[in-house]
Image (cartoon, rainbow, N blue to C red; front, side, top):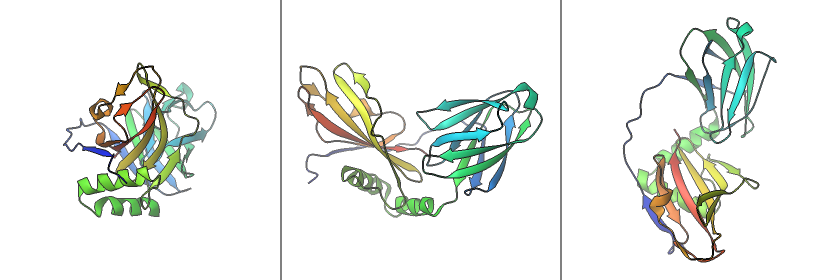
Amino acid sequence: MFKNILFFVLIYVLNLPAFALQIKEAKDNQAVTANVSSKELTRIFVDGDRIQNIRGVQGTYELTKDEKLGAVFIKLSPMFLKRPFDIFVTTELGHTYNLLLTPRDIPAESIELKPLSSALIVAKHWERNSPYVETLIQLIHYMINDIGPAGYAVINFPNIKQKYFHPGLNMQLVTIYRGANLEGETWRLKNSCCKTLYLNMQDFFDHRVRAISLDKKILHCNEETYLYRVINHA
């Protein structure tokens, strides 16, 4: 069944720069306290999930969304530089977190919410149950069959816009399979030009990618195929 699937597994060690980060374990509807910069932006994101909406007292802050990564940036309004305030974070997976934020005279920081949910624990167990390379290959097999491994969140994007990878080749994100440390992406590729395209898996690689699979490496005019990528989002 998978004889035409080409696996390209990339394993390496990244030396990531250090940065200010507050990690907060969070349960649904329970208050979590954290500090925010009184003068600079504060980035808030949820491990293994994407922020869908934030609600708080109007005029307390300015909010900017990172639609691609599912994070938000908050900058405090001048009149609220000293008073603690609440915000309510709602995620795409249906979770709600209550944050009590206290302004401090500190540099810009990131606040990472780590959900304390049974699904995340199950996903971590699945990812650690097999050798690393085998886990990557198993995840791609699940994605090919449109199934999420145990504990994984499956997020479909039926209406997302296509993006142009290079002239003649369009890419459209179809599904994300989000686990504890790994995340699978299914992309639909289409040859929109009048000549045959020869695809190279390394063209779809970036620093986050751990494994790549292509259904087809040769696309004729108006032909489609699927690209499967596994990235490390931890």
